[in-house]
Each structure stands twice: as structure tokens, then as C-alpha cells.
Image 1: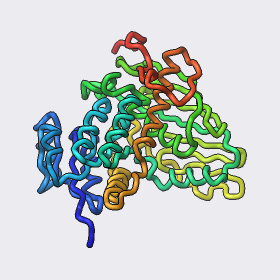
Image 2: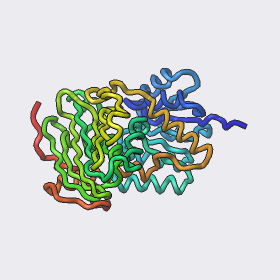
Image 3: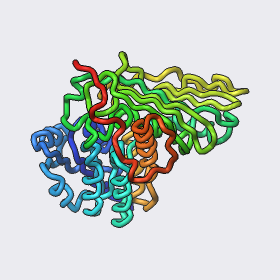
Image 4: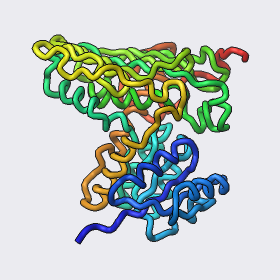
Length: 365
């Protein structure tokens, strides 16, 4: 007998909420039944736009009290992810959590523990992993096609306006956003770099507030040494004009691959030059946080969660996997606080601080 549809709720009806709604509605085996937001009017509008059968609530507790909800998407401000996810898991719900998993390692570990304690699934959202191009690059690296790995670089040059940062009082704060160009925008590319290259052993970095008058960094650079011996660079900013998106460059002694956006732009491997070249991908959300935002990758995440619930297997991106990018970002922040000092990974909870002091720099408008 076929499994019944997984009842789904969406917690948080802001910018990313509609993407999760579209993903749930297009995923076989999932059924959107409820949403909630602290601004009830926003939840009401969200439910109205979602179609018949979706109920709006003004509190998480009301949504979580429903027995016909087996899974929820956490789409609230980053610094509230752990609080809301733990509430959901304590209520017996499986959780798909937007990036970053949360903004401190300690809170992420509390989420992971809550999932284990309640015997429910916890999965993170990193839709760049789902692209066919990303899978091809990862396989080329893991199979040894590039030979000895030498360099793994991530360049994320985005533009975010003053109006963007003013659109929510949680944005660009250490308390609820957890950081700026890296923790909010750059976490996607950093996760993808780790997915392709493997874990980082040590980091030296600088995070700065060079253009925007905000608490957090708008620009950061880091030098990495990977566990496999390769080295690399992370660049992240939200203050260049125009935005250029996310590029991943991977080089070994047998070839180089470049991912530009969601496409393979360079495939220079000895004996198969150009074999997988697709051209340059579009800029996506490089200059506009909603431009080109589709639910395709999120749909795969929802389908993965549905299958996990039905079969009992672990998610493709479990909590510990989603934690990796946050650890790298926290190491960058600690290095910056210490003047570019070399930081060894893994980190302790004492490294969960901000990347720059609130008094640092910033230009007047």
C-alpha cells in the first residue's frame, strides 16, 4: 500500500518561505497543510496564496499541536533556527532547516541532540549540492580525475543594498543573522566548496565592514589548508557593484574545473578537455536576493525528507553535515578577531563569537 502524504508546515513566512511552499507543493508525497508567522497577517496572506487546505497560525505552538503535520520547514531568522527547530523536534516533527543551520556551533549541536533524543530527522538546506554540475565536479575530484589536489577556491561577489539590510531588523546583526557576507550569503558557496574538496584543517582570515553601515562584515577573505593537503581561498562580499554570484575553482596536477553559478564553465582535464563544459551560469541572487530564485533544489530536499520519513534512512544533509560550513565561517571570524591568526579546526564553543567588533569602521551613507 502506498505511503500517505507527509503533512508539512512552514514556520516563518518571509522571503524564503514561498520557495519552501513551492517545493512542498511540487514534491510527490508531501502535502502543505499549515504555516505560521509572528505577524499573523503575513501568515494569512501566505496561506491565501498557497491555495485551499492551508491554515495560517500566529504562533509556532498552534502549528506544532497538529497531529497531521509530520515535517516542518524552518524559515525564520537564522539566530532563531535552533530554538524553533528544537521546539518542532520536541513535538515529534521532522525538520528541514534553512541555511545556516544556526549561527553558533553550540546551538547547532543542541539541534542535533534534539533530533537524536526525539528520534526524528534533521536536515539542512544547501540546494547548490543538488545541481547536476556540482555532482559532476564532486565525482571528478573524488575519483581522482584531477590528480593530486592543489587548489580549491570559492569566490562569492554579491551586492546587497542599504534597503535590503533595512528590510528586517534582524538582518546584519550578530544576534540574529550571525554575520554578514559569509554567514548569510556566503554559507552556500562555502558548503559547496567543502562538499567538493573535503574538510578544512586550518584557516587565516580577515573580515571587514568596508562599505555598508552595518554591525557585521560586508567583505571577507580567507586562506585555507584542507585536510587533504590542498590550499585555497574564500572571498565573500555583499558590497561590490554589480554582483557576480558564486564561482568555485578546483585545480589538481592533472587538470582544472571551474563552476560559475550552476554551470561548468571550464573542464580542462588531460584527455577530456571541454568534455563537460556547459557555459557560464546566470548570476542568480548575486544582486537581488529573490532574482532567479526557484524551488528546484528545495524540492529535492523535500523529496529527500519524505523518503527519509518513509524509509527510516538518514537525510542527504544531516545536521552534522550542515554544521561544517558554519564551523569554517566561525573560524574565519575568530581569525579576523585575532588579526589574521592561523586557526586550527575543529573549534570549541569558545570560538562562537562575532567576526568584527561593533565599533569597527563602516562608512556613513
